[in-house]
Amino acid sequence: MADLTGQQMAKPTEYSTVNLAKDAGVDTERWNRVPNEATIKRTAEAVEARNVKVILVDTAEDGLRALVDLIPEGVEVMFGSSTTLAEMGFDRVIEENPKGWRDYHATITAENDTEKRHALRRKSVAADYYLSGVQAIAESGEVVGCDKTGSRMGAWPHAAAHLILVSGANKIVPTVDDALRRCREYCLPLENQRSQRVYGMGSYIGKHVILDKEDTDGRVSLVLIKDRLGY
Image 1 (tube, rainbow, N blue to C red):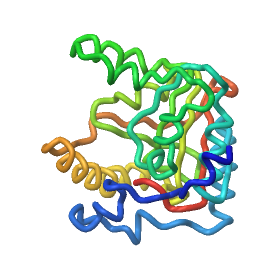
Image 2: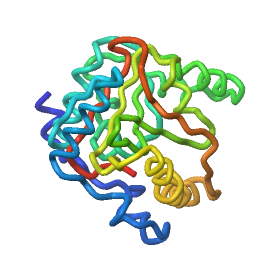
Image 3: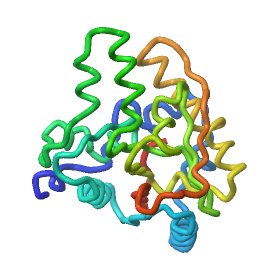
């Protein structure tokens, strides 16, 4: 792993919060703070009580190492669009692919036929291993995600054989109501700015998923990083 962990981690991208927040007009003091150690530990324990394995790490470098270690060699891997994954350096890992994963995302982007590409996207939520960022984590243990079409959220409840979530501790909020507010008041304005810059159009929240209790032992893991990552 020396070739992976030697690179600079938690590196802001063009579409990181620091480059979007001013135009988005969001309250970073409220929604982007890292809570104290006791709150992080208590939240991790609450998530685990809902049958989600938590790997609690200090840095993005540690988080990337934990993420790679969770995925066996040669399995099928799909990942949703995630600023957290990008800031961790996962784009370089999947490009170099040291464990010989079957990269479902590469299969989708290589398909030129629109209908076939859409069909592959629908199937991708049932990948062996699906990686996703999150939008909020309540101190009571619920993990909340949202997106426009559900192309990522579809993997969360059941479809993916293994779901690996990644999050900075800045996503932790007191309650589920606060988590949903964070989606609306913070994540959406930032994503709207990103969408305007990338696609020339705004965004909206079409789907919410609240991971309240996982039924299948060992299916869902959360790599929780004691740092500020993603939005």
